[in-house]
Image (tube, rainbow, N blue to C red; front, side):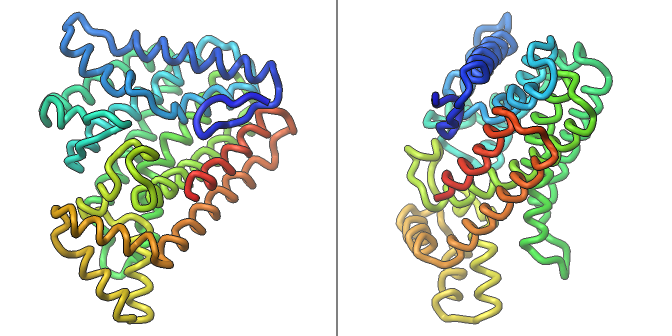
Length: 336
């Protein structure tokens, strides 16, 4: 049993281990090549987050999904590079929107070079992803375009908030399906599609990816409150400070509206106050870490991870399926 990839995924089969290691190494080379420019400053900015590391969660899913077809098919690695470049580009833009100071344990691009450079660097990465995508065929372009539309729509819906009468938790889960689930689903879809897997297999893995993507983001929501920066790679409470209503906060507000407990109402008022002050943010984090809403968010994470695991049922039993199932467990473990 060898540990590879994010979360300490353990691979029990030596052939699969070799494929995963080789695939991720090839993706890493592809990322560095795709982020090179004739302008040295652009190369530096574009490779800033690539060289900072990261979980490479989406490329891992591409490689694992390709095991259900011809894992050495020429489109597998480039499609993984496309998905990761797209993800990286969204991080540059997200950090500008969130005014984040840290990403992956290093200063964010906007903190280092300013918002304009960060936004344009994200655009540069989108352009490079599109260039690679063009060689993968019109179906790949269509799949990516639809996912990107969902991703942007999810981001806009998050910014706009739920419409009158809409349950905020349901709204938020829809946001996550678009904002995060769509690209994770594409990672699984590309891996299966590029390997020539049966269409039924492609559909199963796409459904798995979307559910796993939501679970993954919910785990991030928990980590934003429960972890320190060494675990998450970004400043704890970033979403709280920016007023982003993540699931633990939504579960708190739901409970406050239902039970009207004074301590819940007081905590909601604290979250609605100015959290730019570090002491107030620390107070809010400490209160949320001890609140039942955080445990409820963990349970929601477990539910989505179980749904992702259940989606894999139609697939044949093999080491790749076992690894995909273990990723569901790893996401749950990550949320504590």
